[in-house]
Image (cartoon, rainbow, N blue to C red; front, side):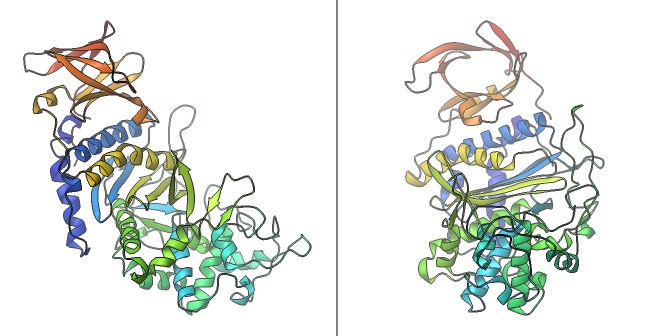
Length: 498
């Protein structure tokens, strides 16, 4: 169901309660806290949705789905735009996307389960589990390629198997074809020398899972990870039976003429352990909540994986000599605003996706899109940037959040800017704020306002809270603004329906 932007804030409590009910209904053990009901969080989530909806439209992304998690609470999940433009099928929290390289996290968890079960060691040479593994190593005394090297992308292996599967029509090799070509390939560097992202490496990690468990890779992951975590819409395959239903159609990058074209359906074949999974915003939110729950359990935690093992996976295990790339065991690790995050992104034909976790704060975000040429990590990071401060305030000072004056709601909406797209007026803290759209940095683009008279506000300067110029709303007969005046210029109100 599509709602107007103005109506969205009215439905916030309902949407959040529904999301929370989904989490509770499936048996999460932690009691519910009031974080989702805190006015600071409610307003931040509304700003996040306002920004995400607008940015999707300005970037001409057919559809996006997203989620925000705090610990065991699904604060929000939903979607904007279309999963299938031709059918006008809306994107939502249950839309299925290819999650591409996020698949590597499930493969890495499977490896670590088997490590903990005594079936393998991280320093095992790859040939110990895969007797058919033979690849040329030009460097003298190169040393063994180990399982840990696969998970940290420090194995020295080439990025891909020797097939052009990232080229239209996206024909992926079978497992047998990958093995057949392996002897003709060669490593790029000696092991443990440089970071080299490798789909081939994680494909081989999936082969180790199959060999060490004595079952197919897909069977192992489904029985030991997906089913125990109740990830019912996640699978180590693209669900062909959902074409024309829940599965989003993938689209190309924008051409210079501003168009996107639908891309053909694909299956990842032999590289499934590296890039073949599909999932939804709701399932990936549950995947994040599981990690927070497991870490909180401490040394005794053992739900699907041992808690110390997950913490080990989140920890940096390899740093490229240039100190620009850091990797845990399967997890990418990065810094933003002096904080450390873990997660992974994905890029497959027609899809760009990302999961972000800040374990210390138990905050996670999910972003899924059905188009190329999109920066999914930036979207996931910006969702965090908007909502995290409000969540942390609500956790630190529960019950201290104050809802803004209901009279302010009449000003909320989008207003046309002749020079810069539009300006969304949103509820923010105890007043209003202007959000210039489009923007890749919504927190910086927010300009807080303070009420200084009848239908009159002043911009609050950042840093010292000095009041700047006035913004005056002109009201219509229905009691709602028709436009506002700012710096002697007019900003007409846009229709609420999108």
